Image (cartoon, rainbow, N blue to C red; front, side, top):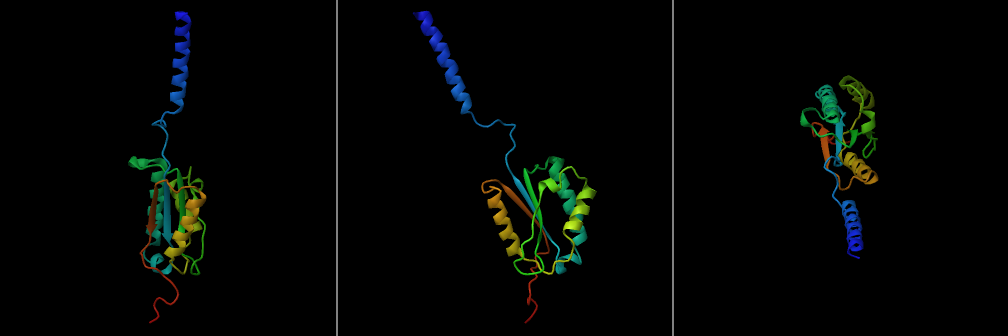
Length: 164
């Protein structure tokens, strides 16, 4: 009888270990979700002085993050878009991380110059953040850390802003 109880005790111990291992915290090698958002101003006030430098910087910045260079955190999600458009409230799409992966700095720069030509008439921060909020909800990034980087002179351009 005692031999049988010892056998049942061993089975119970194995069952308890299996149950506890199913409740264990996530493994340390799992990457935490984090998102990187980059907005680029391609409007009149910015393009004349800063557009070329901003595109150059953004290309290296994105490449560095994608490859974790110098200790930079690799994003699990990334979205790049322009700030503004031709009309107030105009929504423009974001380019996702897949559009940048496996590309060199020069390829990223060339794509960004194609996707974000310096021709928007307006800088519209409200439209940019409204689009971003919708994207965050759609991609279920509500609780994920999000780093937002804006390359802009900070001057909103909108119709009638210089009219007094």
